[in-house]
Every structure is written in C-alpha cells, then in structure tokens.
Image (cartoon, rainbow, N blue to C red; front, side, top):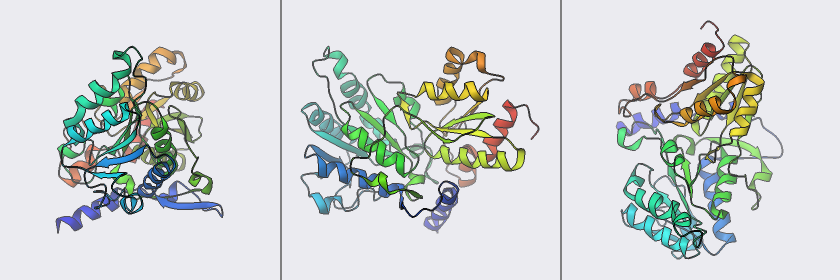
Length: 359
C-alpha cells in the first residue's frame, strides 16, 4: 500500500519532458539516470585510473540503479561494493585520489555523507592549501542524490548545495537534465580538483530528448558556466537541479496568462557560480527571482542577493525575490512535503511581486 502511494507521489512530482524538448530526427531519448550511467561508463572505459566505489554499486547495480550493468562490464577491480561506512569508503577514495587514481564515490544519499564530512572538507578540500601546493591535485567525484525525494522524511530530504558551496577547495555541480548530467559528470571526473556532484532522485526517471552529439565520448560541459534555458526580457529566474524544470513551467504560465517574458537561467554549477551570466541577464531584465528547494537562510538565493548588491544594484528596478523550500525539517506527509517545496505557482507569484503586477 505504502509503496504504491510513494510511486504515485513520485510520478506526480516528475515534470513533463514534453515541456522541455521537441522531437528531432537527430535526437536521442534517455533518462537522467541513464545519462549519468553512460557518463561513468565512458570515463571508466577511457581511463584505467577511474573506478566507482560505494554501497551496493556493483552486484546490486546501485540502490537507484544508476550504476546498472557497470559491474558486469568492468568487474570488481573497477566497481567496488563497500560496507555501510561512509567515513571509511570516503577516506579510501580521498587517499586513492591523492595517490593519483580517480575515484567516483557514490553516496546512497547526501544526507548520509554527513558521516564523512570530515573526509570531504578537512582532508580533501584543504589538502592543496595546507601543503602549500605540494599536493596540488585530488581528482575525486563525490556523487549521489540530493534534496527532496518523495515521502522520505526529514533525514533523507535535505539540499546540501549551500553547505558544500561555502567550502573553498571544492567544486559543486548540480545538473538538471541529461545534457547537464553527461557533460558535467564527465568534466568532473577529468577535473584535478574534488567535485561534489548533487543529483536529484526525482529527476532520475525523467526522459529528455537531446541532440545525439551529446553521446559523443568526448562531449563535456565546462564547470562554472550557466546556461540560459529560456531567453526573456522582463524578468530573470535563476535556479538549479529539479527547480529548473519548475522555473520553466512557471515561465510558460507567465507567458500564457500574464504576457510576461521570463528568462530562465540554469546555474549548473554552484561553486564556482557563474556570476557574470546572472548579472548580464539582470542588466537586461532589471528584475530577478531565484528558485531553490533548500532552506532560505544562508542558501543559494542568499548568495545571489549578495551578488545583486555587489555587482548589479544600479540595474535593479525592484528587490530580488527568493523562492525557497520552507524553513522547516522536511515533512513526511506527502501533502505537507509538496507544500514545503516550491511549485510553479510560487514562482509565478514571486515574479508578479517583483514586477508589481496583480496576482
């Protein structure tokens, strides 16, 4: 009974892929889960130093089937199952990276990574600085699901973008669609610095249609560069991960119901943040709304607010509006959970507020 309820809630939470992409003879369709899997397979096949380590990633194909088939293709030497000990296998990964290997460390959820935060922040992120550059590389990717899921409760539903985005020495990436997932994960694996790769469980099963060139083994996206998913002239909406889809849905509603032309920016990278892309957009639209499913205090929207004061104040015609998750631990109740996460109508109302329009 509970399983069927959760499955129904998950389906309801998934955005319609038809909203995002149109069909083409030169396109490929796959889910975000498959895009992440294909990126890991490309890099494991390309570079003998790359390996995947984590709980149930090998013979069980991963708790969310993101590593499906990799153990059968590459064997136990490249795909490592570990005990339930985040601090232990994270430490193994950090040591391997410092020795010259390129681990991909999977956390079943980033909530469990708090057991290993000392390895990530104290051992990994600070190694180059604390050795005066002698240890100038730590090519490791920590990846797993981040943010709200569907009825998983407060201890499994936190967004860690702002947590890790505040740490010097880390790069923090948060993909939305298949293009993001493939291009950014491949760039992260090849980067010589530690990368925090924040995935959304609610996006894993969402299919996207995209140009087949993205399946090229050498296709990569630059870390630190945002993408304008929808050009517009009236207001800038900035978001990342699943909230990009929510923002695009809101932009469609704004256009259809209010004749408002919203520009939607997909950050892609939390650290380093593409400050120039945001400022350039605000110079054009003179209004900005940020959307995230994390908590409001000290969140990504707070950083964007600071950016507006520092670099775009003279271009603003109204204050920056933050749309965030509710400032509470995530409710287990599905209706309350939905109320705690930004929905398209919340974004629409935020835009109407900054434009001084009636709801």
